[in-house]
Image 1 (cartoon, one colour):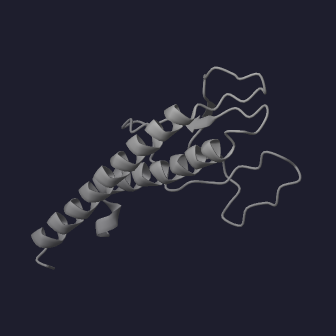
Image 2 (cartoon, rainbow, N blue to C red):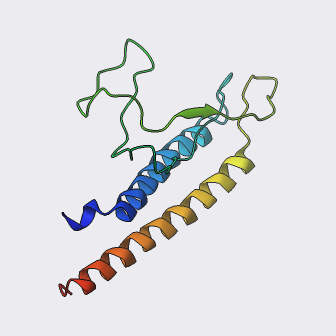
Length: 132
């Protein structure tokens, strides 16, 4: 079994993929802060229930028939998108820059923590195998 196949490393890798995808969505929310009728999006956190198999990547989702199909696989999206519930301005835009920037900062800290845990766990396994 490869080192990367350990359940804890799979979970940390899934968590890092989730944070990467969430960062993309949060950046999109901020970029569209002045777009009329734009609603902010966010992701539901990954579920690490032992009875549910782990997701091994983030699949792209076509939201319009005019979008180009993904070459990475057309399976269901790995993480669901959920709409934010902010106050709407007269233009119909519901993005709160303050809230989005707080989410970005928290997301970055959580990603760095997961990446650090992944690196330390990998080093510990390598050390135990004498491959350091």
